[in-house]
Image (tube, rainbow over all chains, first blue to last red; front, side):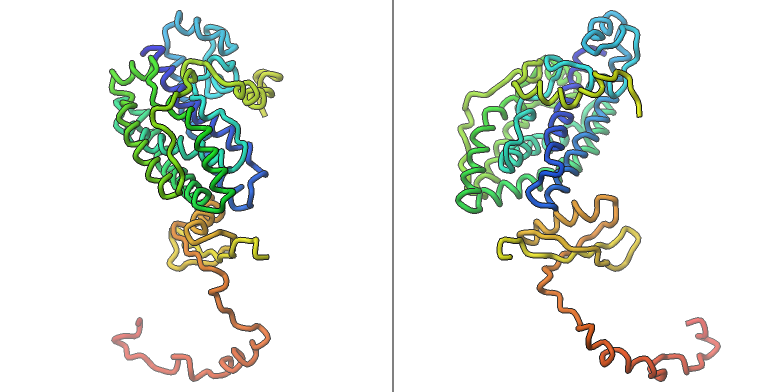
Length: 270
Length: 94
């Protein structure tokens, strides 16, 4: 078992954690009561997936050879021989050790941006989890099977909102189009294979991202058309770097909120 | 008031139940959104596995002020209950 496998799981876990955290910022601030409940439910779904993945990441870390663990331990604020648990990775790494795609750390901004961000990600997760059900790793397959049910509902929710806002009033259409256009450059990273992706693909644990990319474009186009929204250029320049620890300025603020209490009172419990 | 989305009544059938029960109401722009909102608001603790939504304006309710003329007359008409028949032994557990 290599560090690549750990990093692969962290890619998945960090995606779930960061989008879950971002969406949770809407709690109490939703535009209407029913949607406040809906979106906080969605945040909980993502955080639940993050928990399962971080539990697996911790167990993979604990099984690493001593020298490899010793190299990573300082980034986790733990001693080289200390056992990691599900909280070690979320609460103790700094921004450059997170492997989420940059799309998910973008600002909530308004309802249209939030919907667009989820729409792009949900289209990806449904295709991705569907494929990962066939992973040669049993834990990944099990997590994918369970997460797929949640992802399908998330996709239904975000697609319906893209259609309603796009094919809505002049203002909602303008806001939705702007959100689609502004976030477009962050979508390419979902399909860029990192070293971890490539290594896991060779072992049959991961799935080929370029196959998913074609389906993603087809599905996104179908919804955008129904929403009377213009699809941005498929060959536009794309941001990259999240999977290898390069993040936008938002990451620092997100982690400050997320990690403050654990860092201020290390090892505290309720 | 025209700025508000229409009001919908929500009925949920529990996993072991046979009938949909009224659980509350919510606002939504249309039936599809009402269904999703009902799922998010009224089934998050596994309260049910089937949802009906009906726009509140389509529900017609009886007037409580007319209760005495609507329902009291049925109170003392004992002959309307099927309790006067003596069942033959062969079907006594019917």
